[in-house]
Amino acid sequence: MNIETHKAIPFTIAPTNHFLIEGQFNDHFARFILDTGAGRCCMGLSKAIEMNLIRTESEHTAAGVGEGYMERFEVQASQMSIGDWRVKDFTIAGLDLSGVNKALEGIGEGPVEGIIGADILLDFNAVLDYQTLQLALGNRTSFECIRSNHAVIEVALGNGEQSEKTRFIIDTGAGQTCIDLQKAEQLGWTLKEMEDKATGIGSANMPISTTVIPKISFGDYALFDYQMTIIDLDHVNQAFSEMGAKTVDGIIGADVLLQYGGVIDCEFKKLYLKI
Image (cartoon, rainbow, N blue to C red; front, top):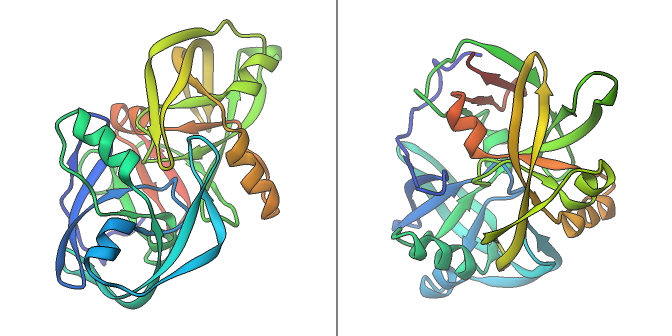
């Protein structure tokens, strides 16, 4: 991993474990969530309307960790910049981010105007460091980049002969690591319903449960007796199937990446975790 040619951009971390980065749309101030779980960079529809940008309805819908699909638009923007980095004359997805901003408001955070997605991160060989924004030494695990631009990693759940190979999205936009409801039921794990609700793009107050997994391993790294959130990923997998991509069983969220100093190298498709 060579970061000498990269520009370091400062970020803050919200209480939800999300990266929050300041930048500009067409010289208008904007706050972004940095989200490897978003296949495309997007702008909030309210911001696009405020700036009077050209919007055309997309033939495709958007699916996130939430309830079903939501309408998507294509927005023409002349420039987006973050720190010294900028991109000009591009098309960005337009989405209703009101559910996300309502959740941020509930924890005392200001609203966001957009999301930096995996398309930008991959195109510009981004290196995401949860500890220092520099090289982190430790174990590394290769990940796959599927057609939707999502980074997917193989994860083994359980011990020894009881272990089962699964596929997880690496998602900096997910505050917590989680497993799909159907997979948890298939493995016969005990589910405990939580009072808290999940909020994502296109949804609010989605019921969630938790379960304790004896061992989670990816590459040479392992977590033991880990409490994981359970959420229904059926509509996400339906969207993947429709574009010819393999389905996933869960999400590696910002909680694990923060706790273990994760570094995501988009150029060489490696995930680094400190021991």
